[in-house]
Amino acid sequence: MPPQQRTILLVDDDHEIIESMRTILENKGFRVLVARDGNSGLMVAERENPDLLILDMMMPKKSGFLVLEKLKSRPGGLIPTIMITGNEGSRHRAYAEMLGVRDYIRKPFAMEKLVRSIERVLGVKSRDGYDDEP
Image 1 (cartoon, one colour):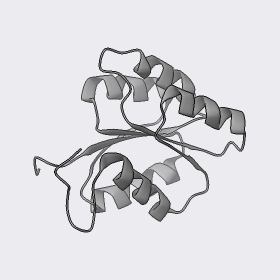
Image 2: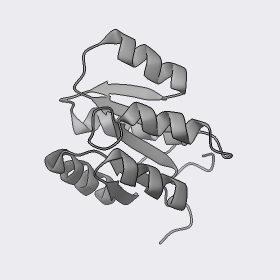
Image 3: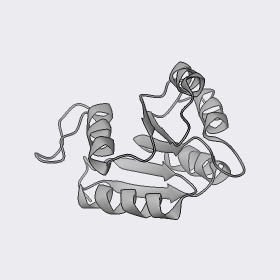
Image 4: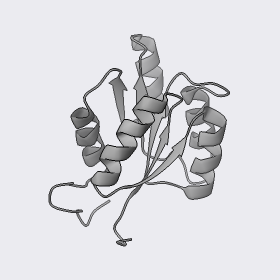
């Protein structure tokens, strides 16, 4: 594994979305971790400290907002996060941004849009390899 390889944690209860994201991101050279609900997402995030969290808003056991609130209060602060959601409400987006979400993407979305967002948040270019800056 190259030392510059970035780790992305996907937290979503939708199997198809998880598998689509995992396939594309692994092909782009990312190390991908998966959690299928908010509680396990929180545990994996705290244990693995990934470079990026891609977090669904509506999930069983613990919502994306509760995961964000908990991670924001940890000693290391919030992991850079992209929230994905089927929710159309602007209040939800505003709250996510107030909690520190770097991007907010509505489902359904093109994987290309997600990849561009990841590259921007992490400061990487999947075509040319990785930039020196995180």
